[in-house]
Length: 615
Image 1 (tube, rainbow, N blue to C red):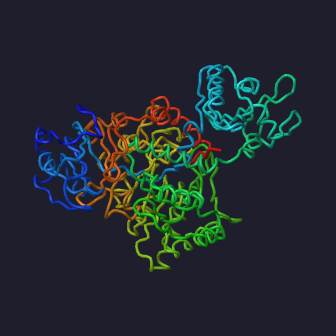
Image 2 (image 1 turned 60 degrees about the horizontal axis):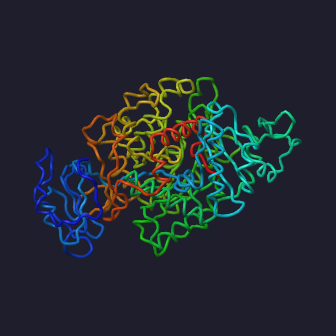
Image 3 (image 1 turned 120 degrees about the vertical axis):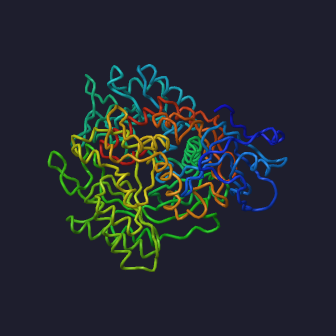
């Protein structure tokens, strides 16, 4: 960008800012205005940009004006600047792309925050001395005695050996230390953790687990595979205060990505209570849609619904409970836990993870669970990745919708939907059932699934093109912290279908940049039942904006992921100005940190973990 964003810049020199040349498909020079709360000048004007309104005509403008949190004008620079006053703030987009605020429709927010310091230290180092130094710094900076030091990322192939308790004990004091490796298959702990877990030279590891020992027969502190559970069982949960701080850190990271709305799928009521309190206190700086965890059986769903109460006293445009999240299968990676019609290449297959002694009982239970949620008037989002699992879910949606038509247009959707059959996509389109896909995972895994799914299914996985052509409402999401919450990577991946190590997986399923952007804005608003007030920059819509330093629409798609986010605006307030004083956020956005997250996320998915959890 030629001009940096300046949060404090007023329009004292407004007359000196000239209108840009008319663009093809641009808005009329005299836009229609709609007044937000109050009257008078705009609170904020973003000018000198390529404003992509993201409406159905994909109109382009030069500037957008916001008052009272609502878009009151969109058009050329000159007309928008006429709406300025003494107290109007301006953002000079420097010729960059101005989009509606990005809506990441599948983010595990506290997991994202817990992935960052001080809750989790990154110990991906080249030497043991460096790793020990990071643990020493964390112990020295700990605010409470005896608190746990948690970290991860160490790589046994990069280090001379795995870190031992004898490395960690001298610098950790009375702090228990637990460090997972980059693959999720090993832990390194200090003696304090071994003591708390009761692990001695005589402890028998669980089947498939390994308690590594030294030459004297004593545990080294390295626990492999199932032996990790001996320690994980005694790691205390984060405190409410730590959880709130992690949420705030996660929100700041999302702001730095241009994200103003998100869906948190599968939370409990305690976390919902925290969101409600933060919303009432004015500290939840994000538009939040949540799905409550429904459980794995009809009984658990009944219990969840019995405890449900509509939120009172909160602005539903900032915090809203949409419904329940259910899960029917795993993931179609090397873990082979997704439930398929045709087995994996080696003949194995996944199965439903819903309660039931047989597949038939599990399917009957998913039908009952979906019916319970649907009949309560709530939306259902169901994790389903294999074609057999997806077909079972869509069949259950249709049965519930036909059995109870009181709740019109429930907007149930399939979460992930990796291998949705063409016929099922056609059925989904006819019945208003959405699909929530994750293009970044295509980038992470590339062609690595050929050995499990075969090339044809690997190419088809995440069938964006087919789904859109058939009329399915497709939204895109990061599934953070499994992948970094970069919508730019998601757009790039949906457009190119290229893996991070090269190769193209599914050229026929490529979509356009415009279509990918719609999946992160207008269609995500549809999934939230909010398309009447957010998701575009049309007059009267929410003043949520993402300013990108680059030409997203017409630039080389390979460069989209590297285009900086110059500003993020939530309800007319600048919440990110292209810089950050938050060290955790800055470190999380470095190329090296993003690549570490990509590598770890890919490993988690290959191991069968959809959403890697922090303990």
